[in-house]
Length: 137
Image (spheres, rainbow, N blue to C red):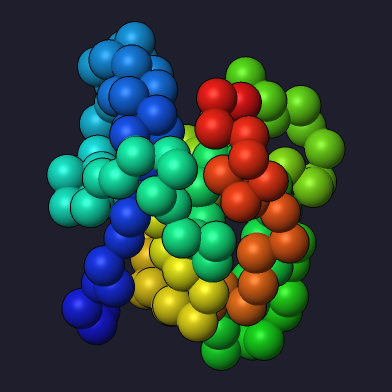
């Protein structure tokens, strides 16, 4: 694996994610170690200081899985917002944890749900709550 890119998380997202993780049963928390590790290394900023090209919670992001080149558009949601529709992805899903805090142009190697690793590259942010002035969504 290559070195992971720097990530930034809003203080509101950090607070909510920490509360979410605190509520998980021990077994489920162990499965979320990658997300915990990401949050531990994140640069935390106030919501009004979040750059527009950053993946935050409730952002709609266009990303590519490499090397296959398959493109996706998904909204990163909390588990309560994951209603089973293919357009939404929970932050607790491996790809959701990988997306959080990345910026347009960033890529990250991430453990695949099916053995091995996948590389995720951020292509565009189609909607970001903070850029839309929705700081408390």
